[in-house]
Each structure stands twice: as C-alpha cells, then as structure tokens.
Amino acid sequence: MATNYFPEKPRDDYFIMECEAHPIPAPDCLLDVAYFKSFAKFIATTDGCQRGTTGKIRTLDMSGEEFEKMPKTQPEALIWSMDKSGCDVACCIPEFFYNTNDHSKPWMTNGLVQQYADKYPDRLLACPNFTPSLRDMKDVLWEMEYFAKEKNCKCLKYYPPEETVPMNDKLLWPFWEKAEELGYVVQIHAGMAYTYRGRTKFCMPLQLEDVCNDFFDLKIHAFHMGWPWTDILCVLAGQFPNLYLGLSWTQHNIKWRPRHFAKLFGQAMLWCTADKIIWGCDGEPDAESIEAFKRFQFPEDLQEDYGFKPITEDDKAKIFGLNLARILGIEPTKREKVFK
Image (tube, rainbow, N blue to C red):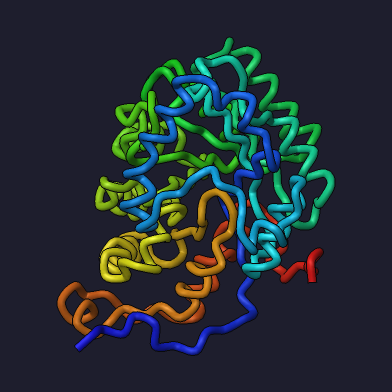
C-alpha cells in the first residue's frame, strides 16, 4: 500500500520567503556567451544535478504556455513567479558563472540586483556576492561596507564553487570578520559544486566548523542541505546557534522522491529543530514544491523507525519564512501582489 506523504489540507496564509532567487536578465541574456565551449560544458555538467534532484533535465528552451504568460523583463519575471506561488519576499542573488565564458564577464552584478530591490523594496532584498578570494581584500571590504551602510543590505552570498580557497582558509578571515561586524547574514552554497569548473572541495560543510568557532556571532545560512554531506551539516547546525540549514534546491525532491526528502528533512528536524531550517527553491519560487510542503507530513513508519515527530503548521510557518525574516530583521507580513 502506498504511503501518503501529503494527507493534510494546506493552509494558504503562510508568510513565504525565497532565500535564493536568481533573477537572470530576461529573455536573451545568455545568448552573448553561449558561443563559448565552456558554456556547452557547463550545461552538460548540470544534467546530473537536474536529473537527481528534480527528475527532469532543464533546457534553455523558453517556450510554452507559462513562458508566454511570464513578463519578459526582470525583475518583473521574478515577481510574477513569486505572486504565482504565494511567495512574499525574495533575496536576489547575482549569478556570476564566470566558468561559462572563460571569465570574460559575469552574468549579473551586485549593482543590478540592488536596482531590482530598489524598484520593488517591499518584495525584494539585494544579496550581493563579493567573491573575496578573487579580489584585493581591501576592495572587498569597502564594497561590503558600501552595501551595508549605504544600501541597508542585510545579507550576502558566498559562493565557494567559484572561489580559490576553502571556506576555512585564513585568507578569508578579514571577510568573515567584516561580515560579522556589519551584521550580515551570510548565505552559502554548501555540498556539491555541481557545475563545470566548480570546486566541490571548497564547499564541504565541515569547513564551516572552523568559521563558526571563530565567528560565533556571525549568522550563516548553508544552502542545499549540504548534500551529500547532509548529516554533517545537520549536526553542525544543531551544535552552533549561528548556523542555519537551508532546503533550497534539495526541496525539489519532495515532488517526486518524497521518502528521500523525508529522510533528509527528518534528520534536519531532529538535529536543528524547526527554528534553524530555512525554505528556498533556488532560481525562482517553485509553486509545486511550495504546495507540496504545505501538505507534507512524515508517514507513521518513519515516525516510528527514525523518531521523527509530526511536523506542525507552526513548524512550517517558521521554515517557510519566519526564521529568515527573524534573522534578517524584516517584518513577516503577507505582501500585496503585483500580478493579480
């Protein structure tokens, strides 16, 4: 007999945040780098990431009924996805992906996502990426201060697949120290790098142990459940009060591999509790997985065999948005839709 992972009638009033939105300029921004050989290699290496997580292979084909409805400008396309899925606020993170074009240009910039946030300040938060190991540190620290003090920026992205050293390399200590001083929430890609020329050896969750020990008050949000080292990240997030575990990208499993998702998520709930877990989809809010998580419940056999407790509506509310809103210091209220 099939196990029912989605027995509950969902609530519709959750405050929902997207921690990892990538509003890539639409619709043809990639055409100017698609001729690079490294671009084709980048696309090829993402196949396994897509297949294992979503059960599908994404393409660059921008067609179909949904695409026709979607606005063809950013950040309107992101806002449209947010309104469609019931997402209230999103952190806008620039995708640099220098590895797709031999370091000739970034796909996006920090200034661009700040422009998006300025246009829709009630819905979007800029989350710049300062690439600290790739630049002169004094320039990095200046830009960090600029965004924090001039733009009231509350979070930043650290993307180790494109960095040149591990997260716990002492070269980065001025960066971590400045982030702690300025009160940033540092959102970090953790786990596999997934992409061509990405460096998984710099993304290992265990490296966060040294960072958390030396920067105990720096709030850190580690994305992707640190997969495939989820157990390590769960224990670390349970140990350190400043380390949060993020579901982004890995949450896609809930739609087609609910038992796999349940085991990963259940471990997170045991070690971290619902107070330390943060929702996210990666890219743009995904209405299907949001609706699935609204109805999700641990089946009885996993509750009995693994010790998982039933997830409550209060738990889901914290995970969907209250936790991230709390550590960012923003008001967790439902936002008015732009696209009705």
